[in-house]
Length: 108
Length: 113
Image (tube, rainbow over all chains, first blue to last red; front, side, top):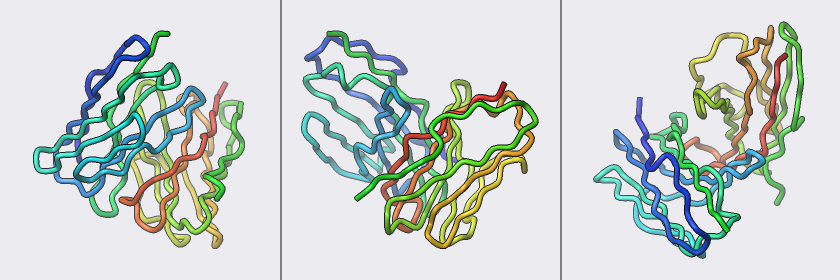
């Protein structure tokens, strides 16, 4: 099956800093999504981005499908950005395969 | 539009018991998937239902089962609970296909004692 790796596993930043999270995947996919898991456990869908670049406020994401990676950028971090960020991929009607996540901690 | 609703939010069960979890997808969504999240194994796919039919199944024992009703609401059942079944169970809904944008509920946190 598809392998999904995320880096770094942990990231601690001061409020106001910028960060880049990376997601590498081992095979062709036609779907890549980024999620933020909040402290209560809910996965919030940030981006559906099989290719190209999208922006939503302080967050943006870029997927280069031909090189099998995606990046999530967070600018001007706030404490509410803390949590675990997951990327997930699939192909066709197969299951979503999740990466192991990046735990982001924003210090005031 | 209401989001994905999972009930109950928390459950404590004893080993050997069985449990049923419920998921109501976003209105109009017909694909419902279930995932188990544990600290050791991460997020693992259980099964996916579409139009009352199981379309995909993950690598879990037969104690884990599910179904989907005509209104797209889904339930999953775990029989003969084991301590290792303690986890956060998450449900996701998408419009038709599992490669479309997925929206998750708040999850059911199951503790088996």
